[in-house]
Image 1 (cartoon, rainbow, N blue to C red):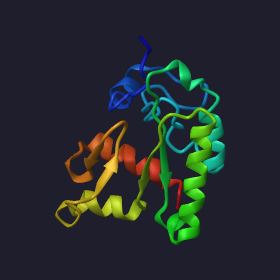
Image 2 (image 1 turned 90 degrees about the vertical axis):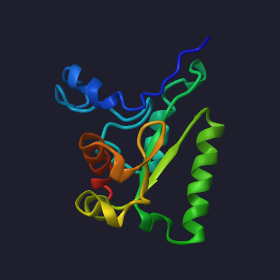
Image 3 (image 1 turned 45 degrees about the vertical axis):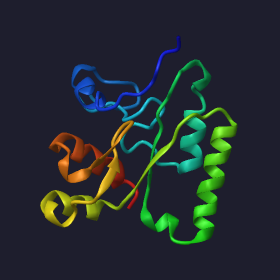
Image 4 (image 1 turned 60 degrees about the horizontal axis):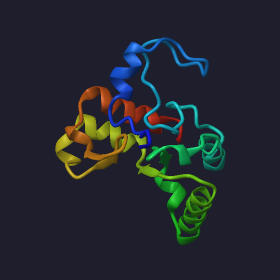
Length: 153
């Protein structure tokens, strides 16, 4: 048997129970949205840095781990950009990474979906180990997803 490292939606209620952490997270704030994901807003040094940080965890010890990455749509505007992302993912897996999931959406779209859900019924986002229609998520998780994307502007 191996432990699993997927939080699904426990990062919200779990954060309410956990005190302040050394990375600057305050008591009661949400935890990171995945086992090896960065805490919301802390992945500021680019995707390569984020993946290198995630690889500091020996993922072979776990049945599963979870890494959420946030990508602004403009970062994937042409085939060369998509090839770069593909190479980044391949390297991550070759180095021992197990799982990556992406949200490729801008903050303005997410905010508009909260205000005008009828216009965004088909907007699907990765939450934490699963995908869901954004407009069907509770307010706490919607705000969490928005905060994950905000620093990408």
